[in-house]
Every structure is written in structure tokens, then in C-alpha cells.
Image (tube, rainbow, N blue to C red; front, side, top):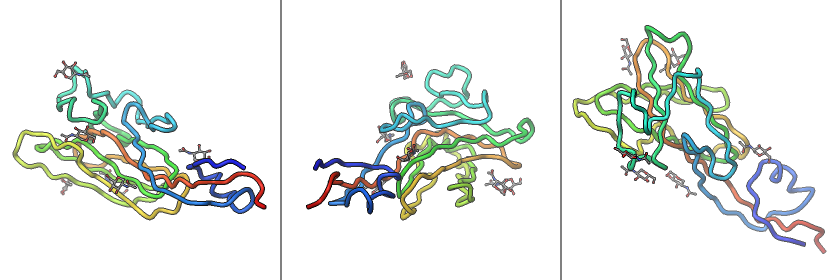
Amino acid sequence: MRAVWRCSAAILASLSVVSRAQGEKWVNRTIDDQLGDEATGRLVTYTPPGVWSQGNGCGYCALKPDNHSALDGTWHDGFHDPNRDVEPLAFEFKFNGTAVYIFNILVKQALTNVNITLDGQLVNTYAHTPDLTNQFAYNASVFSKENIPYGEHTVGVSAFGPNQTNVLFDYAIYTCVFQLLLIGSRS
Ligand SMILES: *[C@@H]1O[C@H](CO)[C@@H](O)[C@H](O)[C@H]1NC(C)=O
Ligand SMILES: *[C@@H]1O[C@H](CO)[C@@H](O)[C@H](O)[C@H]1NC(C)=O
Ligand SMILES: *[C@@H]1O[C@H](CO)[C@@H](O)[C@H](O)[C@H]1NC(C)=O
Ligand SMILES: *[C@@H]1O[C@H](CO)[C@@H](O)[C@H](O)[C@H]1NC(C)=O
Ligand SMILES: *[C@@H]1O[C@H](CO)[C@@H](O)[C@H](O)[C@H]1NC(C)=O
Ligand SMILES: CC(=O)N[C@H]1CO[C@H](CO)[C@@H](O)[C@@H]1O
């Protein structure tokens, strides 16, 4: 018999046949805009192609937040222009877990207006209304949802419609439930 900590939908689904949970702990994992999921390496997808830029080192990007204030020094810079765009500015990521939190960099004098979907259903509309200060707000929570049934979930964030909007995506966090499994026969 051996003991392992696992965090995966398939293992949880097969618990009753293969083994039994001997304990569990909740662990947060980060999905960086550029480096992806710290545990699986899975990357965030950005659409449409060519519209998003890596903000760090982007010479032509109008918005220049402090790279030391962003997680891992990176963020994705996207802009929705209703006069130009024929499809939404969007990003999407997947995770196995029970909670998810999304953090952006906000531009205080500009609008950020996005729709957020969870597994294809619209779950929230976020709007940051501009104030007059010419500053950035880091680690700004634009969405959080807890108590999601454990499993693989897809989160989409998109901007479309009549308003110009800036989206500076820094990172997401999700909560994974680790279960301590004793694999092998019980006697
Ligand atoms: C995970 O991170 C979120 C956002 O920072 C926090 O509210 C939550 O308590 C954390 N959960 C765990 C299990 O650490
Ligand atoms: C962060 O920005 C400064 C200039 O503001 C630049 O010199 C430095 O190389 C940047 N750091 C990284 C990791 O890109
Ligand atoms: C935002 O959070 C990240 C990760 O915790 C941290 O590295 C960064 O310094 C924070 N930025 C600010 C401005 O507090
Ligand atoms: C979720 O777990 C399943 C089963 O282990 C795995 O096949 C899938 O790739 C995982 N998904 C993500 C987004 O990590
Ligand atoms: C959010 O979705 C609604 C309904 O599809 C749409 O009318 C609206 O323009 C969307 N807003 C953004 C910011 O994408
Ligand atoms: C969040 C936000 O500012 N929405 C605005 C989008 O544009 C319409 C039409 O101009 C406004 O009515 C909304 O307030």
C-alpha cells in the first residue's frame, strides 16, 4: 500500500472503486497570464489571435503598468474597440477545482467591462468605471466564485458590445482539493 496526494477529477471519480480518501486539504494554484498553470503548465488561450500583447516589454502598448507590481512581471494587454472589432476580445482557461479567482490590473481612468462565463454560462458582468486618477490598481479582483462542484471547469472572460474597454489580465487562482489516497488493497 502506498500513500499519495492527488488532485484530479479522474482520481476522485474512481475513489469508491480503487481506494479511499484518508484526508483532504485545499490548495491554491496560480494560472499566470503568460506562464500558465503552475502545476500543469496549461496555458491561457487568447482570442482573436494578434489582438493581445504581452504587456511587459511592449513598446507600442499605450498602458505601461509597473512590471514589478504584476505577478511574475507579466500581464496580457487587450483592447476592445467597438468600431473595429467583429468578434469579442476574450481569454479562457481551464482548471480542476472548487473555486476560482481572477485578478487584473485596472487602469483607473479607463473602463474595464467584461462578461465572465463559467462552463459556458454567463455568471457575472464586471465593470470598473473610470475615475480621474491616472494610476493603476494591481491585484484587482474582477471575479471570484467558490463552492463549485469539484471537476474540470472552463472560465471565459470577454469584452464586446458598444463600449471601448481595456483588459489587463495578470493571473487567476483556483482551489484544488488534494486527497490523500491509500492505493492498494485494504485488509
Ligand atoms: C485562495 O485564494 C483566495 C484569493 O486570494 C483566497 O480568498 C482563499 O482563501 C484561498 N484559499 C486557500 C485554500 O488558500
Ligand atoms: C521592468 O521595467 C523596467 C523599465 O521600467 C525594465 O528596465 C525592466 O527590464 C523590466 N523588467 C522585466 C523583467 O522585464
Ligand atoms: C500583487 O500580488 C503579487 C502576488 O502576490 C505580488 O507579487 C505583487 O507585488 C502585488 N502587487 C502589488 C502592487 O501589491
Ligand atoms: C483535470 O483532471 C483530468 C483527470 O485527471 C485531466 O485529464 C484533465 O486534463 C485535468 N484538467 C485540467 C484543466 O487540468
Ligand atoms: C455581455 O453579454 C451581453 C449579452 O450577450 C451583451 O449584450 C454585452 O454586450 C456583453 N458585454 C460585454 C462587456 O461583453
Ligand atoms: C459599464 C459601462 O460604462 N457601460 C456603458 C456602455 O455604453 C453604454 C452606451 O453608451 C452606456 O449606457 C453604458 O453605461
